[in-house]
Image (cartoon, rainbow, N blue to C red; front, side):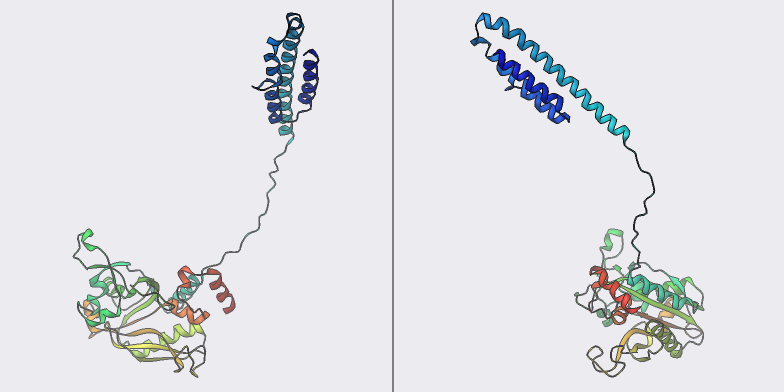
Length: 351
């Protein structure tokens, strides 16, 4: 037992002195004094020893135990001090580091809409905002579309639970078009005025490559004395040539919209076949890009304007459809939920 204790002492004292971290030191401590440690097991063998042996071994064990515990404590403090010394020698480099910056890029929709607004600002048009949640009156009735009018079938309307707001059932909805601004503009401004509206609209659509339930719409409301379809033709050319280039040709064909009389579809020469006829334009060489017309006298009256003195132009289009043509995008859903990188690619190619 005496030789065993001397070996334990020398072996573990060397391990303690060579230890470099606190975790290893804790493992050594457990190997010595833990439940199954060397010192603990040696103590359990005392009953097997004679009295003469105990007189020698017991003091030796006590001495070995005390010196090893002291060695562990001392080495623990040394390791801590070495760690503090390393921390004091470390330096914090506060030199500014120039990180690489990613170049920002506006969404293709934002860029297109800013260009469109700029085109009409040059002609003196002012921006006007109408609510996206609106009443049936401004969205339909005041626009010469009374209840049960067949034209309402043209809009798949999303109605809200208006009773919660103390409004008659079926009278509160998500606007289906920016034309809900027309009567508001007339009631808030004295003619002549030139207004443009750009905003989000909503319809209960079956989603496909050319239809979305949420989309943007751009509209102008222009009221003055002596306006005619000639003014409408000029404004149509001003927009389409500004978007597609001076080579774009524009024509108007008869069209029906309840809030205009006469109404017209604004067609642009097919940018894919240059008027020769292709699958995109259905072989006719022209693409319908917007709906327009002279504001209906009933709508002018609802806006508090005398149709015998003033006439007006209402004209609008969907920016998404224009962008599909301009950049060759084949699915309208790409704009709000698709691959933005693809849109940026289209925009880069157009430049």
